[in-house]
Length: 330
Length: 230
Image (spheres, one colour):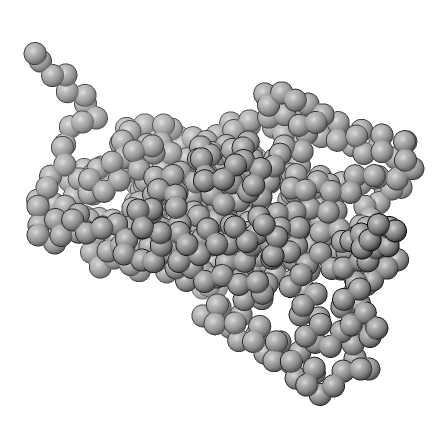
């Protein structure tokens, strides 16, 4: 054996920043390889659920273990990670997962959508249009869109194999018969590349149109159910509907109480015992960005009230985005 | 006590042929994986994987790096005859990846082949309709890959998931029958074989979801497809 080889074998696996005693990004290399192989198959067959050997993560199932395993597998030293929970960067789940990777992988983290190369998300797609050099990783509780219609995995496998999706149309029809409209408002089933029916994870259907032809790669990880699926960039994703009951997204009469946005997904917040409430953007980073650009609840149009400084901020943001995109392209 | 020697265990690792793998097994594997992920999710995009100086035997840089990144004791590997007969290749794959080698391409999770020794496409595992992910991934070492499709008669126009409008790709040196079978195999989606073509330190992927349209000059394939349609 050459001396070069033995010196390599005696070298610790990695000397990069991270928690002592753990591999880079927590997962061991063999698990990562297994997940990487599953991920490549998921990308090759858009919307199809690839089974994988889900590992135990140091937090309970239901807290994003599927998404975390994908993030741990994809992430590298050069990445900047953003984690959102229902659109917010500052909720418990988002904060703990972000800190977990800051600690175990030593990577940079951010709350700014534009600065992130990886975004792990629970139940939202950022309002800001994602770029081709970004990857969006969804935490998925139940990956099988047909599960509540057909509990047997052997049967749902067959239904996917035969592209037998009539049962889902019946479910949506029952909504129409009972409520007069399609009442499904989240977890709204989509067809990927005209072949596989896919559960987009419990994002509001408001976000469904963003999945269609998205420039970023979308990866989905279900830890408890041990499934990985994916939508490559620029892939056709169509929400199910009927000719006479076309797909529609939620809309609000109110606009955001902070930034005045009338086009983003709004959270309803109860203010007091009297039942007073306010509506705010669910995407905290988008709201912050708009406030920085001079949009307010009183001045939702932004433009008229914009001072030269605000215009400058806006232009600089755009410039930063452009240079970032150029750098990534290189 | 006698020890039964399995035929697949012939050709033990030759330590005199071993060479170093990645400088940093963890970080380098991650970097190569991201290239392969990018290649697979944006078919026809040519990427460079240049993290190793030397490669064992007939392996080129990108195929060696993909092997170090994705192969392990859980993946059955089929090697085309020249590679299978190359002690340096077999010893290093065994040593670094601990991967079992199989003699039937249909059993392989990964098939690694030289362009002039490709197995018939139908000899590989295409997966089954309930588990199409169980299909073989085919890694082919080729002379050259380019997005130029002019001035040659092997050009492809690619369409499908991961491609915004369309993308041209020419993989030089693939046998005619293989190109024809690959174009035809698209009819059986979601069954199929996912291909990665490696030229020196470059790689490009063609997952089964990509539609392949042979360039105008590729009359032969067009006619064959036409005949089969009729």
